[in-house]
Length: 441
Image 1 (cartoon, rainbow, N blue to C red):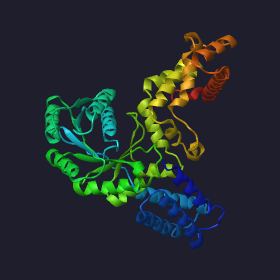
Image 2: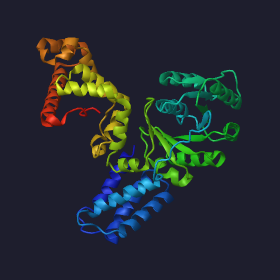
Image 3: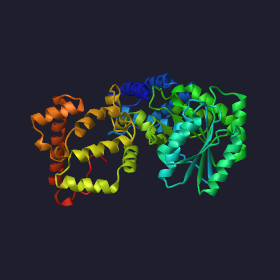
Image 4: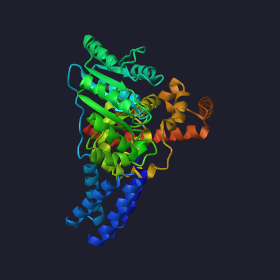
């Protein structure tokens, strides 16, 4: 997401590089390019003009420090204005009531049901007892899909397949939740291929009957300005509390994320990418602005690592590293943990400056498959003692993993270099200790 916008903004900033000072002329040229970049990213024209006018005003009103170039200053101003455009600061969800009720709305195909599963998983990790409720009575297999997702995340699903009254189903689900100690009820509703009166009446009736503490509107970010227009139409009838942008890992220009807060006047609360139940992020406007400008988002990366990596396991690995005993079993375990953090390319994009470097690379979980296959083709002894792997063992491992001997050699070489680095880090740390050193998390 945002690759094209990031590149266009980078080109715009280059017009100021080498300039000794900010002037009305060079700022006007740069701001014009920024506006074009935003419009090309499918940002609402009025919104693009509004934000670039503000950027120009801010740039001309600030003095350039000796240690800061005009390009750096403008980048900082654009970062601030993009963050403000997307809401300024994080807005949380309101989970109150006994049980708390969260109503999920949106068009068919926007990813409502998948988000419902992800949101249930998110709340469960917080220690909340959640019940998913299937109120999509029209789409074939919608109930089955929700049940599969519920099973994946370990959350119960309430459904009445023969009942065609969504209000009745939802009310029965709430009664079920009270009887069974469920503290949050997530209601997955029906969508349509387009906005129609019947759909609006049904979702409005559900909201009126349930009085949810939180109503979320799920929208496909790949639909650009159509997403903004749909959100506006829903909000006029539902007055929802927040927006969820899905499919941010797709070929989207990002206009919806940049426009929706200003046009609809409702905050983006979550962003979702991919099908994994862990692939759901709380939306932080300032972090997203930094990612758009390829400045990275290390804070989110660290938070994801903390969610996935077990503290006891990390300490066990640290002890093994101190003794230089890190082996292929440990390496394989770390790969599994990293994969749980989400889309690999998206994770790499959170590192400063990596956005442009990886934009044309095809990086996904499949990238780990040859490595995993090679390690799994080793014997237990070979995994623990890689130094015993000779020529004949390499040929057997390559054959068993469906790879070439050269690939086995490359992995062994990289693993050896990594162990040398760990040994060097141990020596450098000395008495300071290595308890917190873990190259993977």
